Image (cartoon, rainbow, N blue to C red; front, side):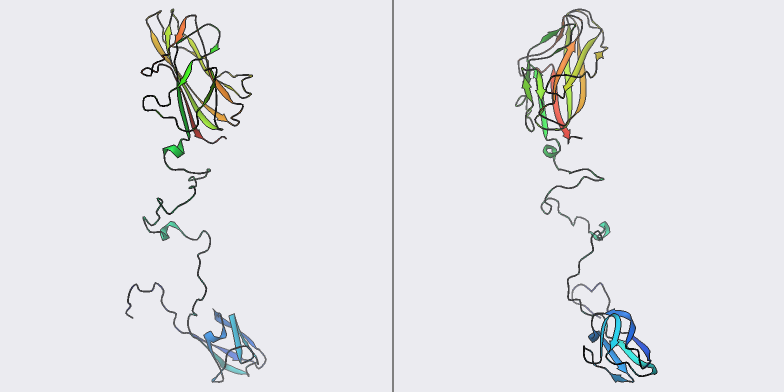
Amino acid sequence: MAYLGAQPNKTLTKTTSQSFNGTGSATTFTLNRAVNTGEELEVFVDNVQQEPGSGKSYTATGTTLTFDEAPPLGTGNVYVIYRGQAEVTTRLEAPDLSITTAKIANSAVDLTSKVTGTLPVANGGTALTSGFFNGISHLDIWHMDTAETVGTSAEFLAHWSSLDGVKNFSRIGTAMTVTSQTYFTFPVTGTWRVVSDLAIWAGQDTRYFQHEIRLSTDSGSNYDQYDLYDQIAYLSSNTSYNQSYRERFINVTDASTFRVGISCNGPSNVNVQGNNTTSKHLSRLTFMRIGDAQ
């Protein structure tokens, strides 16, 4: 058969038939194919066509053919012709979870304008966001604007200033809050990466320097110890510089009580470099939120 336009992807079902033996008492018979109504069948008893419908000769639903009166005794004397597929009058919908990727054409889904909400993370997780500003919700960088000399007892570094708007850097999200230019509190909960990168100058010969990112979970009443001594290269008095690097991942579950500070000590006259100009950022402190709290 010729078609205008696309050819149907399903062929028509050919008409089939079925016969039964009348018993003189049986009024129901089982069909080989399910039907919706008796009008989908042509039924003959002893070569006489019967009229479908309730209160007439027969009805049919599913695979059950029911006569109002039992056909007489006979061999093959009840003859049924199936008229073909019935027209579907209700909308067909695919069952849940039945569409596979093989059914979707390449480039058929437009993620730029046809999708709302957030996409789920592959293989579990909470949500997948697109773009750098969604992936990293908070990024803040600070530097020491004044050099500090540390002694043999551990002390927290002060004199931190924000680098937001300096040298093409723009803070992402809400800023960290600093108290007395020393202690930092987090704007929101989450998993945070904290990096302390200090430039060191020795006022006397030294081989070690203690540098810690210390955390308090009780609003500053107590601070832990994390990473103790740097076994740094020999620093000769007044002539040598070195860099001390610390990195820590902190699971901030309560932004109101968590805070951090940078603690240092070493032999007397070890100097942590700072500069109050925007051209030099010798000692830096970076805060980056990389995910939700765990």
